[in-house]
Length: 207
Image (cartoon, rainbow, N blue to C red; front, side):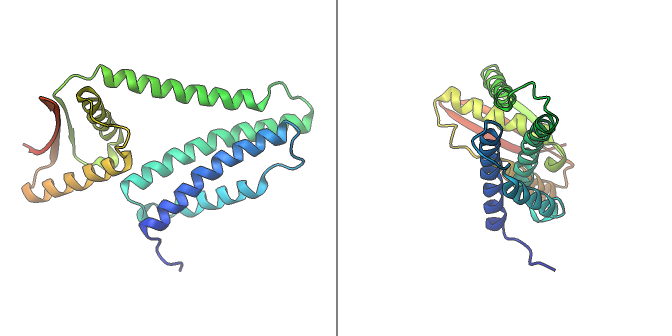
């Protein structure tokens, strides 16, 4: 049995996963554009190997790592579908759309999602409240709390870009477990509020 990976090992693998996805996209564009003679099968093999490895190791990852891994798998799956469709068209001689246009469409969708998130943060009302029973099973609630916290920081002029989504998710998971054990509460309420020029994030047992 292989040794259990450490958190630093997993973070390193996820970093490589993200870099390989970007490199795969670049090299496939070069291949379909005629700049390379062969598709980047070696990179794709590395990605597939990593996906299989961590699909069986979900318990070894913390909450933030599982969230990041899920997003990366989703991104890779989208690009992989484009690559395979484009390869089939190339083999059949029925190419109708340039790969770059399809890739740009995905990037456009991601930009639109980011713009929507920014707009949503601007419209957030404070105090913002959300309750969690199990953050690992309530990803949407944790995401909403994270965006509200970012919005509050932006309103007070505090730096929000340095705030790590993964670290925030891990904080909520640990804080929820801690309060539930200390108080025997079934749910924990989080409140993001503005107090003057400062942001406050409070957690308390919900009766």
